[in-house]
Image (cartoon, rainbow, N blue to C red; front, side, top):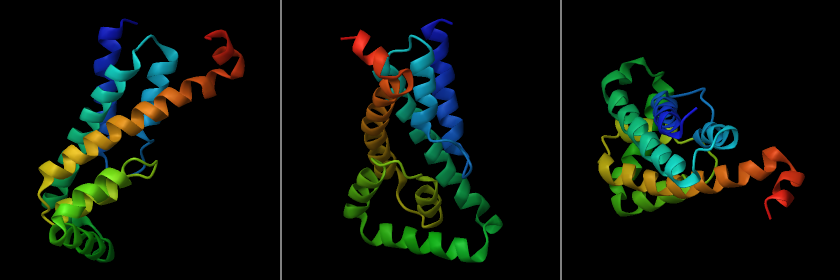
Length: 157
């Protein structure tokens, strides 16, 4: 399939994965499948995927503000407490999000908390995008040789 068709499909998939609050695979793993099974170039795939992920997380946070009554009381209190912490420490919240999203841990709870805590989303989303652009590029790049085995990585040298 053509790269110009696959990139928007990959980005749309990344967006949808990050819009759903739970039970989704990591975005980098889905992007890795696109990268390994096609000729999709790494950086357009991962940077566009990070932008799409940030858009999905942004809408997740906004949606949480509207649908908070559907969360269990305990989960809602925890998310509101985390959101309150991020509001009180707004300078550190960007650093926390950036560093936290470099790793493989899911960020959906963080964005649910940002939504419930009425945290100012624009700096959080930018930090998430930058962090995920770096992390996803690294994870997807390293997944290729791992998936193809040591023989494939030796042939490319």
